[in-house]
Length: 187
Image 1 (cartoon, rainbow, N blue to C red):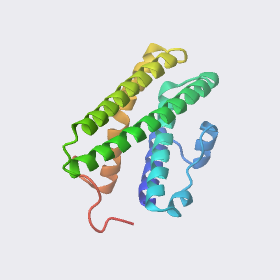
Image 2 (spheres, helix red, strand yellow):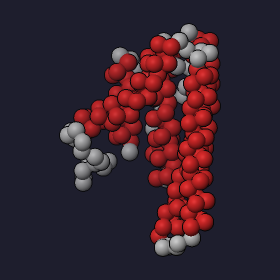
Image 3 (cartoon, rainbow, N blue to C red):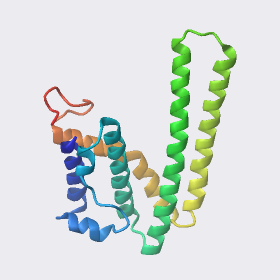
């Protein structure tokens, strides 16, 4: 796990041209600096949450670099972005719980049509709420970003995860499309 964090941090430093973690502190005072000890001392579930938090931090940092905002716009953008992320996380958590409930219902081989319909409707309502939240976030961003910046942000969101995973796989020596660590690769 520690190797994974070091790889992500190295990618961040290499892709920004930074030579030391001090540059990170100077460029992004609003964001906390990575601390590997926070992950090493946690249980697997907590590690996953910490890794997700760090992934989101890196994503925000790279997005801020791309958008090249002034200080006031950057602070407003970060506030909007974090609020949106928090709301989306809550929606996705609820959706995941419903999917788990549906999974249990399917495994029970129950033919309770009313229960199935109830879960289907709740999932559909959550999906609608998610789309409404994205639309609302887009309208809020229009007050801070130009159309070109919003376009860059959409493209960034679409490409960031896959490109980062591709870089990590390259560093691990994996071929495109190959997933996970090979036996014996774990630290």
